Length: 274
Length: 360
Image (cartoon, rainbow over all chains, first blue to last red; front, side, top):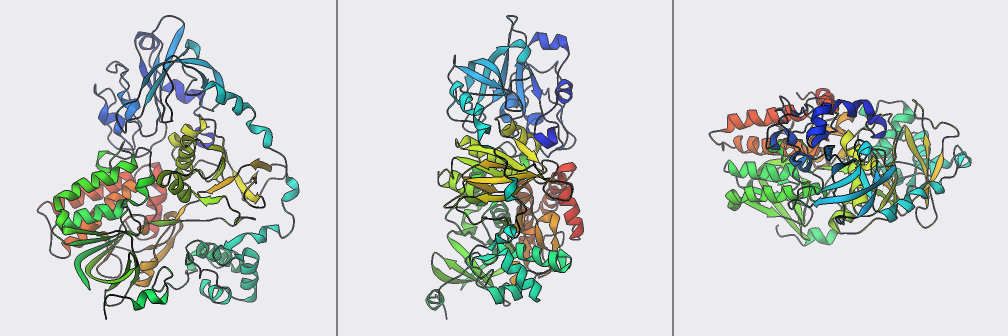
């Protein structure tokens, strides 16, 4: 599922494809943009007006494949790097996938790379047939030649030597259930990093009856370090809400007074005015 | 005492747009930025922005400050910029105190536009103080501002847009991302961002949480587990992943200290990241003459921050009697842009948050 894994399933992809006759005719984009987000550069940048104007910037792009030449202008502007140009018209058993690629260094034309699918798994090999670096802030486009049956799977690539590292990646995982639920361990979490105050200490104070952020600050110094409670303040308020049952929106932060950052006294005596 | 029509606090996307808009209307503007460079988080955003052309869609975030600076050339003499300057306090008489490059300064503006942005939320888990545990913003700063890799093998916690984008940037920097874990059952960020890292081989594990970090001098591994609907780890599902960096990307909170100091009315709205200022449709808070724009007013995308910045700049200037003949049209256009950015399913969270804060 796209929203749980980031991988679009086949149903979604099939809906983005043109008719079989159009697929065989010339290159075409696959716009893998399935979520309504505020974004419209593809529709305003197509030189052939093939991506239809949007009523709302949240609209999902709609493509007129007859007007589209497969030029790739949309792939270069798409902020989501979600547009791929597919060519199934080569007629030699291979197809090509043009994908946005924002990594250093760009591959060399002719280089053989490991191709990867939407889930990041290696699907095979491809040959780099074109590298188009684009203008200063445009997105570089890399075109890979791949077996024609893989044009809808290949969406990324890595160099051949990186593939070996990918295989050994999961070796480090070990089950460590013994660490979990060991009593009290959770309370050693640091709440106030500046003053070194743990959750255990904060909770003990709340249990003793200190139930405002200000009271806890005065008794423990939590929130009196360089960050001035920016980090710990909300965490202390969360603990107070949890332990006392007060609604979180009734718990005020500690009093804010000038100066917002710690300053030595000499700074104020050296001022420019009376 | 430095006197000016408008002070803009924060030189990120909202503050930059606010400065230009107020100056174009004829106001004198002082833009105060904490860091040495303008641009805020934009300078770390190497990806192309979404939205429409009006919000610089398809332009990389890092290139946007230059475009805004170019627009500023037309009104350059009316905008004064202090970088390396931190606002320390806001007082009842309307005076702002500033640490400008180590020197204590006072500023008296007629209007204030607060565009201070946000800070990162953190997580409480065992060993969360080990070296190697960073916020996603810190990792972006290391890589994209200072050119330093944070480590070799990163576990990302949080699959919102920031977690997904920073994972991608880590891959671009040649750093391995061992996995992205997300407590919710669905990926929170845009699917296109998720697909980009997934096809490069990064697993995205929804309904998973980080249980603890392990290591002595620094992170050596992290224990993750699958969780049930009640956020409880499912027995037998835990595994230890070898990594030397854990990157926390679990959301942002509005950086609203100065608004609290000014005693602006605030309301806790989780959908907007925490306490946010109440404000009217002109982006003016409950304290007259203080305006807000961008993440300090509630966490959204940078495109919305830019539009809000422009609106706040126009409104602050208009309240001083300074306005252009086209202000009504522009005001309507900006509000429509905000409505459009917040429309659709991806804007639902922000819409419900704004409704809870009484802002429509």
